[in-house]
Amino acid sequence: MLLLPIAALAMMAFFLVLLMLSVAVACEERERRCLGSPAERMFRGMSRNPLDENARLVWATQVPVLEYLATHYSSGLLPESLRPYYKAMARSYPALYEGHRFEEWLEFLENSRVVCYRQGRLQMAAHGQSVLDQCRSSCGHDSRRLG
Image (cartoon, rainbow, N blue to C red; front, side):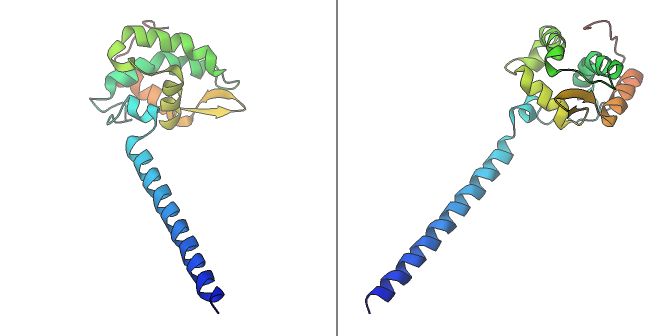
């Protein structure tokens, strides 16, 4: 007789623990979304539209990389081949890149949908070509500066 109430209490405790775990997971996920990834924090609050006044400088710094990717569109590039571009941009624009790693920058480009990975190689996405065209016409960028 006593076994049935104990089993019922054990089941209730088990479901309570499951409920608490799911609440903890939901809270952790919410906090992760609020903090964002390192790449999202890299240019937090910046519009990804290259015509936006606040984003113009950031996107103008990306033009040499986008042009380089555009010339290798069909084959793509190993991500490591873009490291010299990242280093040059970080030297030229330290306020934008300070405290951010190469991998975070690649993630920013991917999250912005200007590049994509295919079989481990980076290729310019269709949106990347659109961003490049917009920057060429509106950002007043000289691609020889960083390349």
